[in-house]
Each structure stands twice: as C-alpha cells, then as structure tokens.
Length: 96
Picture 1: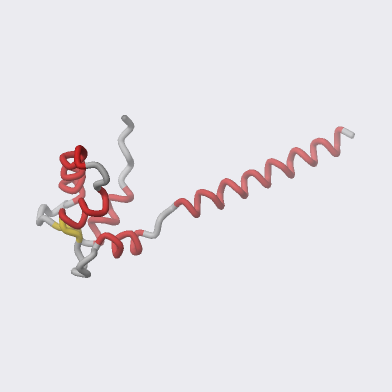
Picture 2: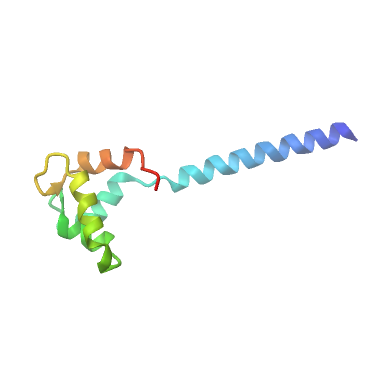
C-alpha cells in the first residue's frame, strides 16, 4: 500500500513539473512578433509615438512610459531598433 502511494505521489509530482515547464514556455513571448506588432509603420524601428500607442492604456501613465522608452533606447536616437528592444526584454526587472 505504501509503495503504491509513493508511486502515485512521484507520478503526480512529475506530471506537475511537466505542466509547469510547459506553461512557462508558453508564457515567453516571441520578441520578433512583439517588435513587428509595435512597429506599425514597418520602418524597422519603434518610435516613441508607436511605443505609446501600444503600451499606454491610461493617459496618466504617459510619463512613466516615456521614461521606460528612454531607458530602452540605448543609443538615445529617439527610436528602438530590434537589438535595443530585445536587450530590454532580457534585462532583469526591478522589484517594487
């Protein structure tokens, strides 16, 4: 009886582990698709206006979104190329 319980417990644990890994893989976004979605004029770069249009759901957060864009714009040219965009996705997020 104990052997069956242990086997069932290990099976359940393995199943949960596989489910968790699969869920995490699905959660990760495709940076190419996200970039293309934001680059509405197909210029191979994202302007501040394009960034705001996709990210700003509340006008009160405009300053915060502008600051985030400026941090992402590593060369300070006023637009995000794909490499800057991808690099910003890989940065560790600050805890609040």
